[in-house]
Length: 406
Image (tube, rainbow, N blue to C red; front, side, top):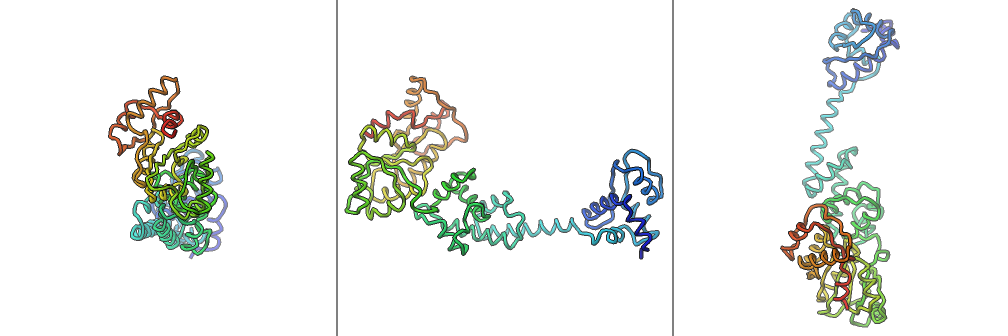
């Protein structure tokens, strides 16, 4: 036992910093007396008290090195040793090294179990992100399981309301709202699936990624820009579209309106052009173009893929044009494969002609950046783009596109 007088002397303010340092070292060691501490920041009063505790002279200046075994041996003359003194002065010691090992072991078991119930690449991405690092293992695994169910339920060809999906899987319509942990880890899976793992950087990009995956926040706010669609049949929505097409007006369609057509958007065999930039639609309308045209406005959102899917199902002859850069080629590949579209002025010869035209008119062209994408529809396109090294956007070749539409 350690006497009260001894504890009072040891607990004086001059040794407070020493005990803090020793406690940190002992707990980091796994509550084992080994190692040393070193510091030059001792006051004259602290140095005098250290000299008395250690039984040796401590210099008035400079670094002092103190081994834990040295302190333990000195204390055992009047106490039960260093560990007992630390607990008497500051409460129970924690085995922080053991706690770290336990957390690591728990984390290993968590991620092994998660990889058995979900896609390993997604699970690894979630683990690396640290999104669930502070959660108890059971809660983290529950979110992984819910996220896996959400990812399995999403299909761009069969859009679903995000609130409806959240209610079905989490019990609340707000379970996939922005800012929730579940939404964050699901978005990581959607990014891997649809945009090469690049996480959205803002609210607008997050909404676009949800829609691309087939989860719409609603069926009326997002629209697809069209021109010249003339659906057959007698539905009210079809009549309105035909009237606007005859008047030369462009039309923004919602998912709800597409579904209200109650029939194909065009007659079988109709040629429908697809562009990426709204400027193509604008100028086509100004010039009285009557050929059906659909604009993706960048990466196709759910409402765009809903319309393209309906057009493909109706037997339309779809022809796609986009930007000549690596993301543009990747997007073209997805549209061509998914909807059976044909490339529209998207060959190596078209690219060369567009670059030549731009240089003739002294139009500045930006350099190509990022990782090259192989154009599956034309094996000469990617090498040609690498050789010329410049992006070619739709705005640069508007006249060529409009000639086709007219």
